[in-house]
Length: 162
Image 1 (cartoon, rainbow, N blue to C red):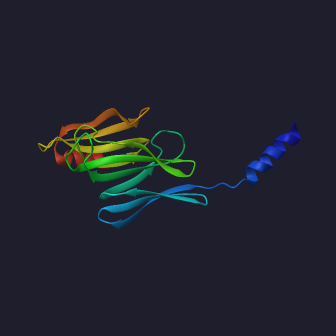
Image 2: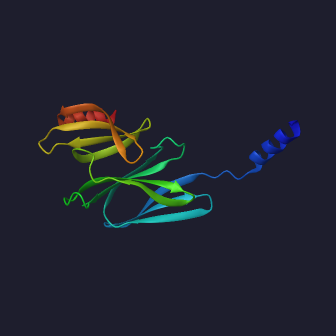
Image 3: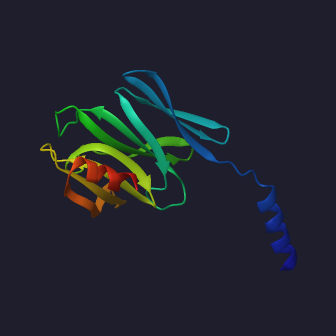
């Protein structure tokens, strides 16, 4: 039994450990590539619209980081050009879309990843703002709570930046 444990430990220590890394390669205003480097593998996902932000974080709690990408585009369900949120994961060294959100509630102004949650700054279009915390559900982001609601832009920005 002791020998089997030593062999298993030796295999674990000598196995190649590689880290994944998402990055963004911008070619032009309307062409970017989300790039996944996973060990020796590289995969790219073409984004044919403006990208205004990208960050990474373990959105679904599986111990691996996902890429959270902010794009500006219309969707099938919302024909207005607006900021949208896309979430991508590493699936065996390949980029796969987890969620390509059309809308989160209000008008998306900005987003960030903090403490395992996606935090968004949203506007109602009438100069009132909310900062909303979201968690991963089976498919897509679910509402967790308002950090501020019906706030001025200044108040909402303070809460968003904390």
